[in-house]
Image 1 (tube, rainbow, N blue to C red):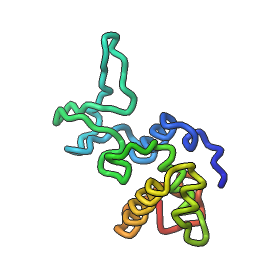
Image 2: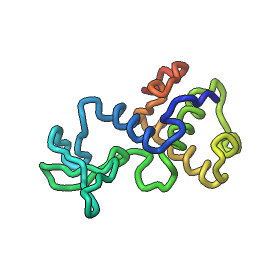
Image 3: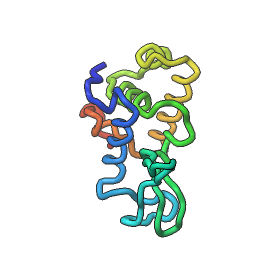
Image 4: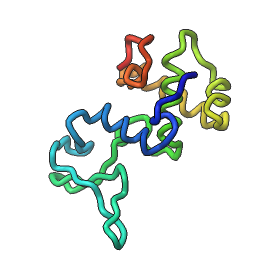
Length: 142
């Protein structure tokens, strides 16, 4: 498994990669669909930015790039999700859950949850960013 890219090794780089794939022209509010009105959320005494959290100027709600995706409401690091996508959708033959567990150094239960979500999303016709992650073998996904 060739995982040399930065977005396979760190959560911050993975989030930035997902933002560039999902929002080519800047953040889009996942609640109202507004573009160009989002701003980063400032937290703390020194107005530090919480990376990846945005505030919509239109509907006034907070959102991240993971809302509305298979990555929503999970504590699994985003770079592990991108590794799983690459592993599952770049293989020529089906990849077993045990292989995902061993390759990503996660528990069997976590590997099962990840593969179930990803395969369900693929069957539902949702877009998978596997080609943008360096996979050119799968033509049915994007």
